[in-house]
Structures are given as structure tokens and as C-alpha cells.
Picture (cartoon, rainbow, N blue to C red):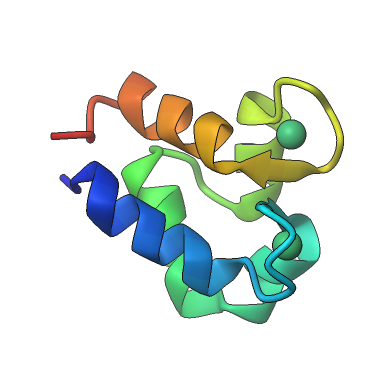
Length: 77
Ligand SMILES: [Ca+2]
Ligand SMILES: [Ca+2]
């Protein structure tokens, strides 16, 4: 379970170049944070997260997409 605020802070840490989206590379650069994200979204890997929740298929996860993923996994409190 995580709050939207905690999710935002996680997202900001993952978004190293601060372009407002987390790319697959950024997920791989922070394995510890990625593990939290995959747990919160009930996925097994960053690739699976992208396959399932990258709705506009740009290879990156925006905060909106991440929020939807966590929401769908019922982990957003
Ligand atoms: Ca980024
Ligand atoms: Ca996307």
C-alpha cells in the first residue's frame, strides 16, 4: 500500500533526467526502487510493467500511467 504522495516521490527519484517520465533504462538504473514499483503494481519486472501499463507505448511510464497501474493493483490508498 502506498499513498499518491509516496508514489510521486518514488517516481521523482526514478526519473533521473526529470523529463516527467520513467523509461525502462531509468527503471534498470534503480533496481531497489523498481522492485518497490513492481511490487506495488503486481508485476514481475520493469518489462512487464511497461508491457501492461505503457498505454501510449512510448517506452516510458508517466506518473499518470504509474498511478493507474498501482490503482488497478488496488495498492493506492
Ligand atoms: Ca526520465
Ligand atoms: Ca507511456
